[in-house]
Length: 60
Image (cartoon, rainbow, N blue to C red; front, side, top):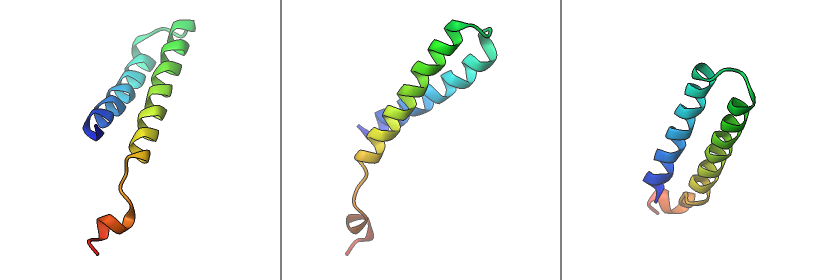
């Protein structure tokens, strides 16, 4: 699950950068950029929620 979220995160970031260069400044770019921004935030939140506790990572 985490690897899928990482893949979605990087794909949305790449799409956002690509859209800023490839698409003219109009409503379509704004809408697509907003959608990719929401996807980035959602996948980042999902990764944050799936992180392990610090105690389990310390090996104690």
